[in-house]
Image 1: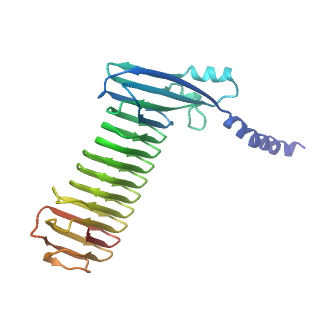
Image 2: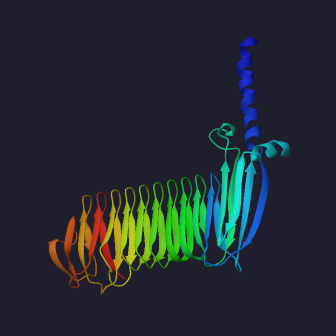
Image 3: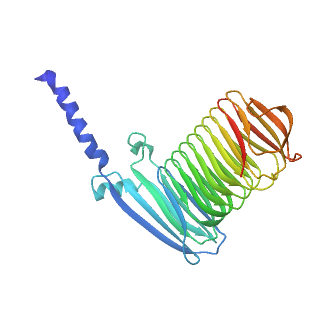
Length: 312
């Protein structure tokens, strides 16, 4: 019987572990502040989600949702002793920070308490949002939007202002932005509907799709396709490229620019354009020339696919 004892103990732990790990107690902390529009919301948390939406009036309401790994309320109280939760106002700015201070209390690399924030702000308000392992969602706001996560998705609504959003392990999505926009990810897709200002888009492992850009565009990926629509005249040099997919660009039929397109793994097609060729041609691996007399450069590159330029 002694030979079977370790196996029995091991099986016991196997069945007991999910019960311990799944034990969860939830608590909520709420605070509301009166502010002036144009302030900044700063949020930092580890492992939790962040959601910011416009509210009514000149108030900021912060809801901190705590998920605690504990078997009892008393144990949850002990866990929360090592949580530093700061929600405070400085003038028109509001700060919400959740930090767990005891590394020894972590389970399998995760802290025993996870804090997510749900915040409503005035319709004109800036954000500076950071989480190490959750998703970030920003609604329709006016101002400067900054958002960073190391392990989730980032999503913006319609922003009247500027956007700087990034993630190391998810997708980045934007409804629209009137100002300059920077969207980057190391492991997902980048998608945007409309960008009026300058656009800097990048990913190391997915596709880039932007339906309409009205200014200078830089879009590069190492592992997917790039598709973009450029509205009106090119306002400066634009560059789109991929190492592992296709490139497709839609331009205004009357736009004047210099096309510089090259691929190592397919062909270049230019449909509906009036081009004065400098080199190559449609259907070949390289095409360069002046479109409608020339102008800013539209540089297109791929090492593993085809390139197509069409008119809207």
